[in-house]
Image (cartoon, rainbow, N blue to C red; front, top):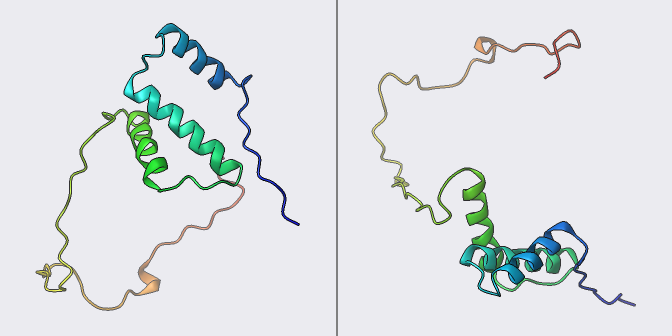
Length: 118
């Protein structure tokens, strides 16, 4: 027997209270960012309750914008595409040594309890 899924949104959570305060303050005229945050919160509640969020873009697009803001970038920071040569015909720099790596040449430091903790 499968249990019924239940979507729970906690109205006493500080984020829920702040969202309600913001809606009341702006008389429902939220910014695009606040609407995206509300959709993101809803998607998170769906996922936590075992429901499907539909397309992955519905969740990842606002999340990407939030991550941009978290790193101090613009919400809609453009993604700079790079060209990648997948043909395998790259010019190989003559100064880069070719061949196998000699493991004895690699320096390995043993970590002991004597090291200061970070």
